[in-house]
Image (cartoon, rainbow over all chains, first blue to last red; front, side):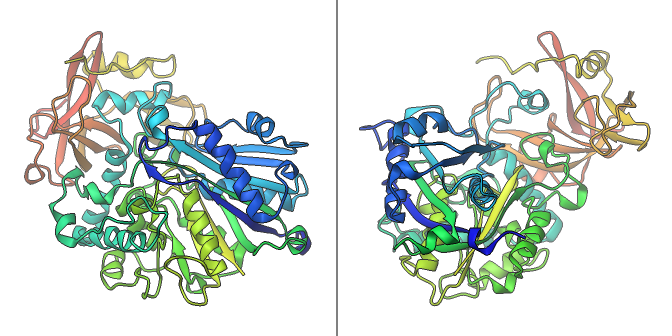
Length: 389
Length: 136
């Protein structure tokens, strides 16, 4: 049992401006990310040079050893990155930061992500080198939307659910983004008619079922309860943070789809969710607000079931009931999420979770005491955390 | 239009592509588990055993899921169908659905499929089409 005095807390958050793809040209992605890490440490009231750990995920190009030099860190005690290429490690990078401070390997760890897609290779684009990819890309399958649409297609077939229910996830994200001045889509309203008139990206996913592609950076600062108590910052406890995968998902949607039959049309979160709630000593009914990784709306639908907010096949009716709206029983993606705020591989979702518990969200849920945040869904590994206060 | 991608063949996967050249769809089976698996590799994904052997699959399967691809892809003319095929032996694999229009009306999930083979440069690539009952 870890000492309560070392229990991990998030004490600072930092965000760059968010723009559409290619909108940031006056500085490099690396510089933008470094500045955002400094912003997060400043928010925590910690001198930048005092940070002693750096974590990230999904083959982050913003190299931690170089980042330590750029930021002038006095000593680097921890640097790590969660495997996997699909954004699955966003909450996982925070889990690593928590593990580092709770085990005493480091005191102040920053989990970060920076992505300026106009400056480099498009994220999610096909890359050679994976042996198992040779059983996928010869069939003309290269993009995450198509790979994950295969799960969504099967989900609706197995459950008999209504594919039109996906509109509710898109409309919820946009309505929340319209209240959020940082959101790339802050000024763009979305109607039901516009949604249904939009083109198929990969049926049953339409244009508005797919996340934005944006430029931006986001970072959170993790330290111990003891250190947090000495700071002026409004800190939030990380009740639990986990990353991992069910069996077979390494050859899952980005491969040959050989996950177990009973786990096929899911978000690869069932085992992870059990671990998460057990470690937090909570159940789904304890969650006040949630931020689901919304790369594709259909995966959010499955995750609502996998995390236990509704039963198998019930998510379409759950979202149609208005439950995920700001005034519903489980408000989700209150910043607009990746469909409508920005696509910073889920680090912006972690920050929105912190804002909810600090009481400063632009779609604030009254008396929010707990927030679930997930990492990329339907990939391996995926990840999640629960924030509390 | 550029050519369709040819797979890179590794020592661990050569048997599969050699089989395809002979018109055979190859799988592997773990002896301790007595369970077939895909994609090719010399460890059982269920138990980690290396006591595995290759065998010829029936070439029959069903349409587990599909997506009508609207994106450009080397050598392909969108729209075209990318599918997950559930093989009769259990494992799933990716394929295109050939001899069938890329139209939801023609693509019913769980419909029967059979293997066919596409010559692509030096490689032979397994593909699937709606079952005619003539597969090996």
